[in-house]
Amino acid sequence: MQCGIKLQLRPLHTLVLTAAYLGSYGFEGEDLFGILACLLCLLANGADPTLTAEISVSALAHEQTCDSCDQHEEITASDLAQRIGNTFSSSWSSEVTTGWQVVCYVLRSSVEERKQNEDFEEAYEEAEVKYGDRMDELSLNQSDDEEENRVPFWCPHPDDGGHSHYFGASPNMAILWAAVQTELLTYRKLKEGDPWISDHFSMKDLLEGLCAGEGIRVGLVEKELMNPFCYCGRFEGNCDIWSHPVMDDACKEYFANLDRWDRATYLADTLTEKLTF
Image (cartoon, rainbow, N blue to C red; front, side, top):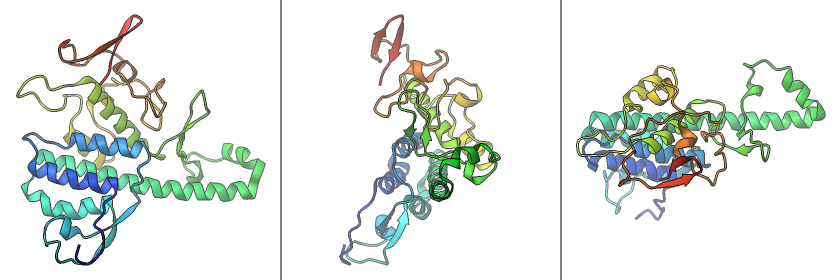
């Protein structure tokens, strides 16, 4: 840009801008479910929502040319979503608007959770220095509602004693990530006119549940169709960060619409068949 400052986005900022353009120029029926899936995947694998980038919002929104420049700002991806949505939203469908609000909620909640967890970890390290060997004893005596009892960024694992995760103490994002993975594993649009996502996952119901403080209100959760998963949103028996879940990992029973042998690849595994994608 003429001012000499790079307009360089971080991954989450880039995803927000992609979502804005997809909402304006995507296919009919677009609801940003794919953007939500990408966002949760990035967060689950360590993308930091508190990181900022030096951005000219008006330049990104094409409200000015690159030959001129207003003041750049250090903003998070969540801030960018709030700001840039006002520019693009006039051309969006109701489905895109709903999806955008869900994406904004996830970004905002992730920032708050990451900041709270940093405060927790700092307090825990200070307590370790102060109390040393008494930490386990003190932890057992804490009440459930004390801040020190927040779930840290790790999950139990039988092999290595634990693995990192990045959703913090709130269970909502882990539940949502597990539900999104299950939706991807169990549903495909098979013919013209079919909805892009199944009856088990409604972006509208999801947003209403989040805004009402009722948690993740989607059919996959309410009907208890998913297998157990941990704080990172990975399913039991498939917690390795390098592995990908298959349908048997995610689902308690078969309810997918994938029994179209010319559309899917199956791998034999003893007496069962697992779907990969």
